[in-house]
Length: 531
Image (cartoon, rainbow, N blue to C red; front, side, top):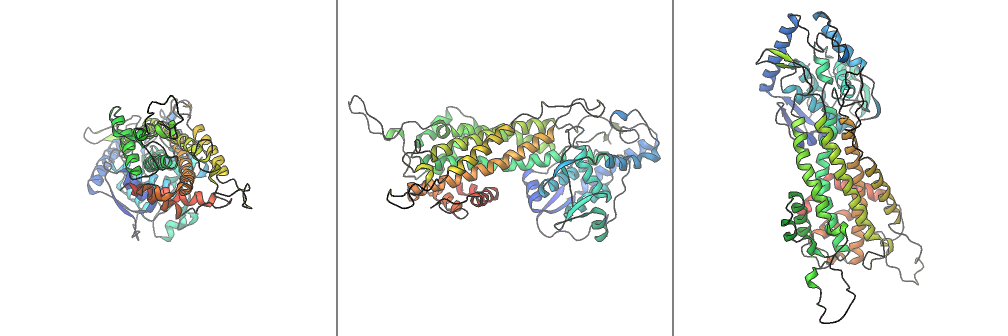
């Protein structure tokens, strides 16, 4: 293919099948850029392609190359039919349903497919990978339905749409318009790719689609872990809580790395606050028989235990990130060609078990964060628990004010937060245990990795909205309490929130405020507060 005008902006990525990082992939997925095949990877690719051609010429039966697919593997075809077999595979797999994957998921999917093939074990031509990179670099994005993958043999149905885009046989998104791939390729002077033996299978037989969802979910979950620490620190101040709950001694006594990090963040974010106290600051009883304390020595669990909950998310992310990083730098198709040994080997590298297990675990950790935010919000809006703040965080109205009794403040926001939390919890059912035997009982045990990764993506998006509601409420609470008494870092976070959501001085719609603060969370600006 001819590689024409390249995008001048975005990230530059050299693909070698071994060293692509999650951060690089997310930057590319969200900002576009230019991806190229490394010279060393190209040499490895060419070597296995040469081996494939030799084995085909010797008329050795090779799964999916000179045999049928799946339970048709016992039917061998002549070498001259091998190319047509690949074209037909892309066509019969065109059975996806559901909403179209977002451009960022599609870019990540295409990048991972190119990187996995660049590892050099798949027996494809360099031209196939370069053709895929041409689409990526021109931001020609196939329309991929989200539903239809069982996660073994990889993401067959979703990835078939990428393969057909190369062949000019599907619809694509290009420059904001949905068009026929053939028309876009012709406009740019790019020849549609005619696949050769193994190349249709190599395009579809892998975990790149589920990895696209997983990578974005992991990246965003990392930011949400910080937002959770920020919310805890601000909620503690709004409720005039006990900052002693976050003292280093407590967490050194139970040294899970995640909770140590979260507690340290909360301490730093609270430092300098005039609103919190330590239990040691409470005046002694001095011999009296009994008294009612004005400030409790212990806060409720959703504040006091928050580092333990957020810390579990951080520690989950540590191994989840490792698994996802390995997956996006793996040969995940079948069969693979061993150039050193001069043989082809069939296996199951397309199986998405690690993505499934990682995403099922991440789902639970994220949904626990949703529940944590929802419980903290309850403490802040409920006049029975919010330490003297107004009911539902309404502005202060004198009883003689004509507006008195007319406003309900954050009541609707809490209702929305509760509904969102319930939905996040519902999605936690592990996908990995719902294997279904399919494809004429050849794929009799499948991973369901794409469903798990899509669920994780959805919970991330839900949690971003829950966190936005919570941040808006905390900003309101601190303003009612006296934001000038809050810690410097809480005041900075309050300022960022206020740039997108004004103080609620009377009942109004809040959906636009939520959307604005969701964008703040997604931007990563809040984590800069810690710096």
